[in-house]
Length: 388
Ligand code: DIG
Ligand code: MN
Ligand code: MN
Figure 1 (cartoon, rainbow, N blue to C red):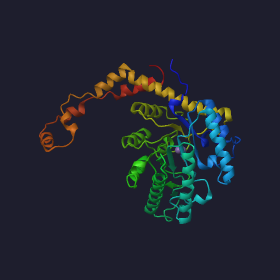
Figure 2 (figure 1 turned 90 degrees about the vertical axis):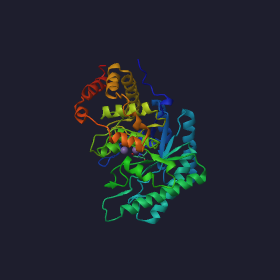
Figure 3 (figure 1 turned 30 degrees about the vertical axis):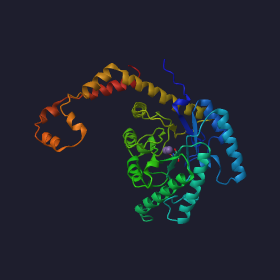
Figure 4 (figure 1 turned 180 degrees about the vertical axis):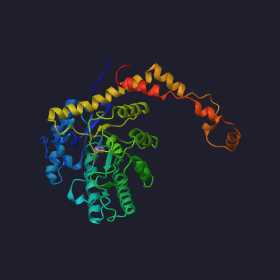
């Protein structure tokens, strides 16, 4: 019987803001009392998580004095030591404070842009102090409701300048830290700049230190845009830019639901887990999600356990898929290659082009070949439904 118990080498992590979500939404007040970072670390240890992530403000309130900060960080580090949890990732809250109401790095106000850099450098210091090796940038307010207010090209330039500045800061400090950009198409802004993984990949190439910057794709965010999350992740992986990943779930075309991983689009979650495991992704499996507003803290623990358990169940399903004789026989048939055109795999040459141009193809036969995808997909469904 497969074991679905989370272990440290599974690298399951949660943000303080996820299990610490008190259930406030745009139409309702909190339904759960607030837990301290120390209490949240122990809650995550109870459910078997490997690590905990945070925005600066999740750990140290924006109003904290230096002496209050010192006590909070001391107690947080003690909780990490007591539980064995680690901090693989940190990030900055550049979306909550009213100062960022028109963006942080892309704000029209140069004082706000400067304050955003100030806040982020201090937050980077805090993240590194707690052990983070990945630093996420989610530009929740980097957008607009009216394009009369800002030239999107200026916004892109400002975002680039900020990231170039912060890359130099990290290099100057000698930090072992990489940046992971997290796209989202909208919410809380009507449109958010650089809305998808694809847009971010193109943007990273324009930076001064692109080698320091990768992606933190989130399931819900690509789904909000009606995109295939697996394809987005595969593009990031292929570019060597899958530095981190936010796992959750989401109905297409809805607001950012941040549901428990695998609780909505089970087939898509299966393909994602299979991909991550097949390619040997070694980063955190970070659940950027939260429990339903209906839940108490027992429900929050059930949410966290469910995220990890579903990931492990789908990981076992992926193993079964890779070992299923009927499925693998179909894939062998589908991927059959008699080697006739293997000469093309080594790239271009004038001789290859001449040979290929002089080749006669039976176009009709190419189109007539049946592909057993219905059978393959039905076997996949039956595997997921537990009848194989
Ligand atoms: C939301 O999807 C964003 C913020 O929660 C955070 O900045 C980032 C880190 O995973 N995800
Ligand atoms: Mn989200
Ligand atoms: Mn996220």
